[in-house]
Length: 391
Ligand code: FAD
Image (cartoon, rainbow, N blue to C red; front, side):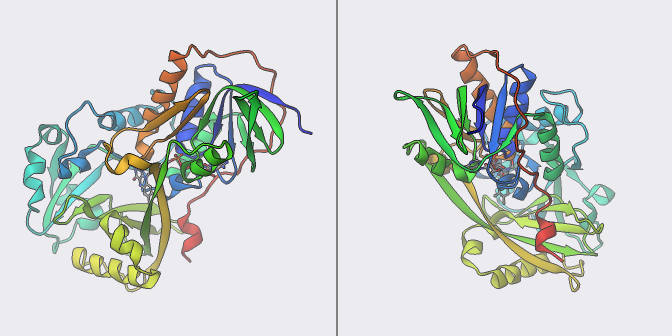
């Protein structure tokens, strides 16, 4: 029987939300343990596009109302952390792009008129031309308009590696999580048979959270999965591009991010409308054909004859009501000692931590005294997922 442990905050789920929270709490002197059953960051986090949104995209549908939204402040908070001066020291994490771009092909899309009518947008967006254009769009045949958003794009594997470093000895590989009860009260968890008592327990297990709740006999908060069918393309002719390409609607037609492959080539990761409903209904071959058609229309000067293509199906895990709720805040629900949530975006991990910390402060939870931890089995780190999907 492994020895029992005690800690202040026991976190289940080592994606970006759990790892960020863990690092923040440790910095404030809390004892923490973070349990993951897979690879750290290997869920949605590493498969995200790594964009640290400031919410500008939502102005396309009129959902951005101003600077009061939590998301509006995220680029600043992440920039400070990347510079080693913020709430966490993320110096050394690779910044892929200092800006994300909004790209309107051909004539100005109608939805941009109301977009630029928003004051919140005008202060954060500037048009770029000529050699300020993203490298992939610098071509005589390029027509259209490009706007620089003050958002950034991160290399997620290097982010996860840094957050895991900040976790020190608090990481625990564990497969089976069961409730640890004192009478009716949840006082901790039993992880692979080992008792762990904690002042608070946080579930940040992404798509695994519903199942974790079920092991505690809980159905709330309800979770929903939003399936996506992303496309990956790698070619020697690709140059970096980080942009939402606008169609006529309120969602980007495609969202392109570029990621470094081990052999020095660039991998384009394509999401946006392409990866949503119609894309989800397509099989892999039809989805690749649809992506080829989009790129042939949008960037016809890029020769993709030697390209390698793949697709990736992945669900976004969110609180069930998020389709109706504002898209710009993390979500946290509480039941006694248990806190359960989803950041809803990688960018919103700081907001997720804020919410947990506010709950701890409100309940007067402070760092306690705990025996030193024994050596624990550590969950492995995720790597760039595209390397496994492409030759
Ligand atoms: P996850 O990263 O899914 O991590 C959950 C962890 O919990 C995993 O490590 C898993 O192993 C572990 N786990 C699960 N069940 C258990 C269990 N029973 N016991 C122990 N551990 C368990 N957001 C942005 O801000 N910008 C973007 O550009 C962006 N692009 C995206 C693109 C795609 C295709 C997708 C799918 C999402 C994107 N997102 C983006 C959203 C973002 O990825 C997620 O909101 C964020 O990564 C969620 O982090 P998380 O830590 O909650 O969950």
